[in-house]
Amino acid sequence: MVIRRLFMLLASGCAMMAAGAAPVPTPTPTAQPTQVSFARFFGSCEADYGTSTEPAAASGECGIITALVNRFNALHRGSIEVRTQVIEHNAYYSQLGARIVARDVPAVVMMHSSVLNDFVQRDLVAPLDGEFQAAGIAVADFTPQAGRAVAVAGRHYALPFDTHSWLWHVNVNLMRQAGLVTAGGKPVVPRTADELLAQARQFKRRTGKPYFVWLTANDPGFFARTLLTLVSQQGGTLFPRDDAHIDLHSDAVRRAVALLKTLYDEGLTSRGHDYGAAVQAFAAGEGGVMINGTWLIGDLHRQAGLAGTALHRGYTALPFPRLYAQPATWADNHVMVLLKGGTVDPATRAAALKFLRFVYEEGGVWARTGQLPTRRSVVDSAAFRGLPLRNEIADIANIGAAMPLQVARQSMVFKTLGENLGAIVAYGAPADEVLPRTQTSINRMLVRAGQFRGQ
Image (cartoon, rainbow, N blue to C red; front, side, top):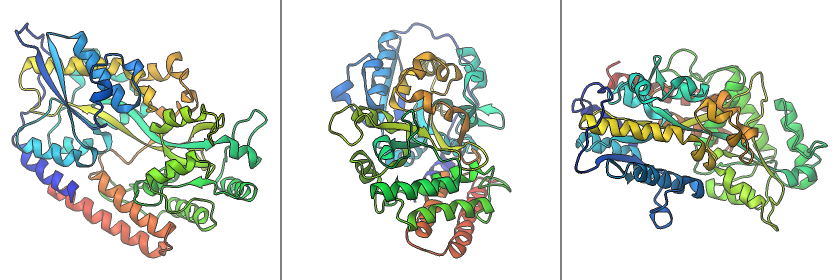
């Protein structure tokens, strides 16, 4: 319902937006600083970081982004002021659509790359290649994954801010108890689906605990992201025909679903955990591997430094292991967009681009959240590689996999797909009935989305 409302709002808002992006001008001095509105999620933490101008001393997504904005404002005091507008995550896109209709458009907008094309197709975003070049933002330095996340038909419509993806968060202490560590003390990583099953069974026999801590309750994204990972590792895609037709009949899909169902049916995974419960269970030592996001690295690494915890001196994180022909793992991005109509004059446009350039230069600071930088030069830097566990996960910048950017309504596709996969894996619904029904439902939704956009 929220996504549909967003599409309706975007459709009515298109006619109200200014066409095209203005070239980058040189701002003229003004008595008052040029104000740049910046809409984002990540929560509010003014009490802790409202006056902080040292991002390197901040922690967490909210703390670091707040300190970054404060630092930019301090460096441009008297000439530019970025004013943050914090919007609650679940209501973010519906509120953004309502603001577009009301012509209250923020200058800079944080969004996910998985929704970017919906805005591009509504003509609410213009390509930024020329302005990037003038501002000194080198698109050639974007990582392969980040470059794909912001490009439509070869043109760049947003600044990639980070890459976030699935990881294997591993309790090495339990792996040692299960006899699944190398001579050097690192966890043994399965190299095939059969090896994964053998190791998971051995882990349960020796520890009495499930190998995996899974997010099976109220989190449909878990199964959808994991399926996309396993299909991509087989060299497959969920959209082999075109961007409006998902295919759930392929051998790659059925192999992936069968593997997930075997793991669950044999008790090799936890049961009934939502997101919060899964994180708590893993931290308490109730399973060997938690499949969850990059954003947890910092918190879990800190716990591993505390004596008396289940992870004490026994935590690591790895990209999703390659179980099939090629390495791949689900990935998405936070990106920064300049919506049409958000910069009301050349001075505001220039100020917004200065802010994007500043954020582009500070990618290494944001990487402390656990998210990966989107610049090759930062990923390859000693500073980034020296952060805890970052060297182990850096390759995600190359192997991150997502739905094709042009697929519409991706959040609804993921939700529908994940809910139905959960019904198969966790509740025993027959795959031969559910997968065809799910495919039909998603394809009807995508066809309607294409007709709604006038395709």
